Length: 304
Length: 228
Image (cartoon, rainbow over the protein chains, first blue to last red):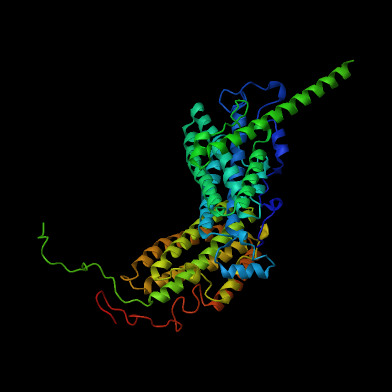
């Protein structure tokens, strides 16, 4: 088995359709909102939104495929990196042409145990979300799968991978599950609220694992820590694409500040994510305004 | 109520545990180091394969089983210092080179069309050998002096049996044609031969036989209090 696994080869059955982030955002059924002209002051995913049912189903399907990729990412981290002190694996890696003197390629045994635990948690989340999707009236493959999550799990540096997956991505999961839990509460769906709360507890644990390992492994390596935090910031921005998640009511998903704090984020880090998210929302609004202006010009030209 | 000051036997009549065991401290640590190495290789393989299998139910099971074997490795990791091995990495190693070759062959299948081979390697070869090694260890170590190992073996064997059953059922649900039966059997035979060459997960003597060296009060077994 190869050491690193390309995102293009993620194995799926025939029900799944994989697309890019841009394609997903262009899907009018997405949780982000309906057509530009119908955009409301608050875009938060709440039951009173006219498209709430469809948007909630789309978001749940997104959670489902996201959990599959999170499972795959955690599993790959168990496999891809040598355990510190594993001489037999070191010899194997060397035989396959790997640079075994690259100390960054070996990880503590306890880190791999955490990743295996995370794989189990993510497998349960797939089970939960597939049952919730069914409960909400959708089916596997009804929405496309955006594989950007697994891409963040493809870094060849385990610490960058942890920063991207456990802190950025699982951090987003905290925001998403908090929103979905609130949605379940508001919609009078105790089943949804109950399940989201359980998954939220797991996600806080996963983010904390990432925070703890990032600090521990890079304790004497400030450059590597800086690089990892920069990578996290890139992934955070990617997942704020189009302003999907921010403090603004115009974003369907809010920023779960309290749970992020529990997961080991400092106040400064939360503020940074809030700023990146708002900037992404502003970028999207500016893009929409540009498209509206261009359409207006086209309309004027066509009618004259 | 009986008089609490009346002398009672230290072992209740129903407690039939025995003092003698086949393994001394060093042999027990050596075996546990080999178990830990093998459990690590198994959870790494299961984790790596998750992304390579298209079948959703198999994908989820591999993720779940990945953790169980990581937990077994953790239990053995914690047991080693209790057996006077203060540097657990020193004994965390394959029993021999043949065991390394077995793991290489086990993890060779990668493409999505080879789920059967992946599952055969784990559930028809590796896990049955874990069950055998652990059962032999549990039944032959001292029931009193090595009780902590026995306790871990009980937990682990429960997992192994559950996973074995689940894996076998997945395989039976995937094998539909005579050709697939042949594929499964051929892969099993190939891996089994490598495992035979290794002598089992802990090397020759994994499940007894002439390779077992006496080490401590390990001859014929007697009941509690007796040492052969």
